[in-house]
Every structure is written in C-alpha cells, then in structure tokens.
Amino acid sequence: MTSSIPVTDAARDALAAFRTITSLPVQWGDQDPFGHVNNVIYFRWFESARVDLVRAMSVSLSMNNSGTGPILASIQCDYRKQLKFPDMLHIGTAVSKIGKSSFELCHSIFSEHWNGIAAEGSCTLVIFDYIQNRPVKIPDNLRIELENSMKANQM
Image (cartoon, rainbow, N blue to C red; front, side, top):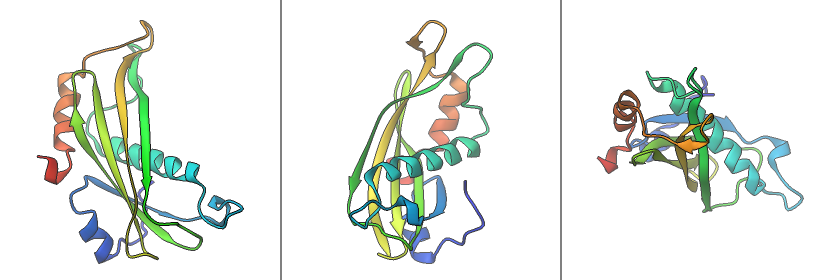
C-alpha cells in the first residue's frame, strides 16, 4: 500500500521512529453522516499499514504449509482529531513489544490537514497453528525480523 505519494517533512519527522510509513488519502466515502471519518475506517487504515510492515520484512508472515500464521487478537485506537475529506494521511507502523507467541504493533496517523498526529493505535498479533487451533512460539527467524522492526524509541 505504500505508494509514490510524497511524505511531507513534518510527517517524516513525526513518524521517524516507525519502521514503515503508509500514505493514504481520505476518501469521500470514508465519512459518516456526521461529516467526519467513521471510526471503523481507522482500523482499515491500520490493516493496510500492518500489511505494508509485513511486506517490508524479509521473513514471510503469511500462512505457510504447516498451517501456521498470524491471527489478530486485539486492536485499539485513540482518536485525537476529527478527520475529514480531503486530507492525506501518513501512517507510521512498528513493532512495540514481542512476547513468546505474540507481538504488538503500534501505529500513528499523521494528518496533513492538521499537520500532526490525528490518531494512535495498536494491535496484537499471535502466531497461530490453525490445524491444532492454538498459539505457537514465534519462530527464531521471525523474532529476529520483529526485533529489527521495533520502534526506534522502544529499543
């Protein structure tokens, strides 16, 4: 999802600690009858940013032949500013915590309209064995990649 949309200097500075920056425009249809972006849309943006982070890794995080892959365990968002069409957003994403079988990502949404952070969120992903229906230990090669994707001020 990372595109050729230029990232402003202010956004780059605000999101410097993040591993990836995903740029997305606010779409007219993202708004609800109250004239601002509907709360559900932020989770779609986080999903796009999460996919960009995974694609930036050298280790595959998708479902493999063993039936093991990631599953979303939780997600949350703190809304700081109302977003409206038109606007350009830049979403910083990084790993913030690594556990035995799970890891947490953090996100910050920078709004060009507000020239600052408009929302922050996080999600927890679990490495899951879909055949045995249970969490499994994060493989060593993935753990190394996750450590390399940690938010700069978390290290």
